[in-house]
Image (cartoon, rainbow, N blue to C red):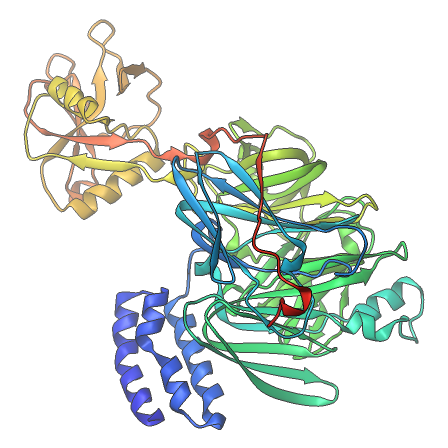
Length: 625
């Protein structure tokens, strides 16, 4: 059966590579999970590894946008489930489109339905028993579905122990995860000048946990490889649809391979901090297909000590010099004191996952390949900050909502073309750049001063001249020919306007449409001369814009005013889609344009609606049954 599956799979791979598809349907069609079921036990891991290798080849360049329609997550234990102070576990769901229906499911039971309008955020509170404190399987995870794209922010709080992160949509989850052991003992020993000893409470620091969530409506076969100084252990887990399993890492490096998509949370309920207190930490682990080899480590206010945790065998370079050769499965943390001065650029000799570690903080870093054009930043306190990383040459073009960020506080990042800045914020904001990709992190502080946070929510990867695109611009044309004035009114009557390629980027957008349209001849655009001054101006809807700074005229154009008062664009690539001036009475087809919808134009509610789940109460001993 294994050999038959292998031969059929080879044929399918050729087709999928040609189709360039990597969604869940493609994975299911490949059907390697059924192959592994019928394989002998010693061949199952090999089949899973091949499945993952295939998906990494086909799915290179997958989207990293963090909004979507399908989400799945869980709430780990915060400090201790028996702690007398009540915990608060919430999801903050923000809609971008009117009449977005959102539903929440727990244990295969629908517990919440609501309709959100554009810019509205709903905070949903979950009961205490949703916390995962047992090392066993459980159905008490949270599944969020919506009819339109939303973002979901995860927040857990018990006293001064606070953690928050965005929930990745299902399309950003994976089947292959590698989680190195966090050597918290090494860090605490260094802090207390105990270089030749281990910090006290050794077992407590080693008891980091993994919550593994089956994110699909299918049985998930998961292989767990646990590597420690005592050797390597391998065991298998079978999870039902939408079931989770919590395991202890016990001082081991862990690798996970699965037959279906899964989410993985690395967590500890109570790690010691410099004040001899403790707080919960949570890292939403990135799958291997989202790893990278260059990173910018953000500089945080009041973060005096920090370390790096790196997966895989790699050489780490800082400021152009090698600072560490990290062996595979090594638990050693890399001291990283340079963050006191500014953000730092580091590179690795191969693709890795990197976490920034500090007492009470575990932060998953985003690789440079996951930088994007615009982000949503949600701050729930009055002492929040956003760390923005932008190319030095274009740093003065960063926007927060509708205003340019004007500041002299930018700091160059050594040995890179980037600079970074920390901006104090509260509430909800869109941070974006019109021409290049940037990186953004969001942080808040506990009462103890310990920071918590995560990368900001990616809304769109691609820069746009007008803002953070929610819905792309649209072009349409018609088979009917008409004069320029008739074309202008035709576009307005269908809620469009004549295309106005008033910049190089806008011309590229128009060119992309014309290339795919495959026609010839000329099309009317929204450029014409004033009858009184003969000055060229853009007709944007019913408004006139006289600042024409960009043009794409063909040789010999524009012609004399008495011959040509209006402009048209060529559909011929050989003519470089150039413009030609013509008599406005010439009959051509119009090219109509509708401006995209932009996140930065949205109004976000600052007074959030709140809702508490009233799922039927269950006994604590039944929670994980």
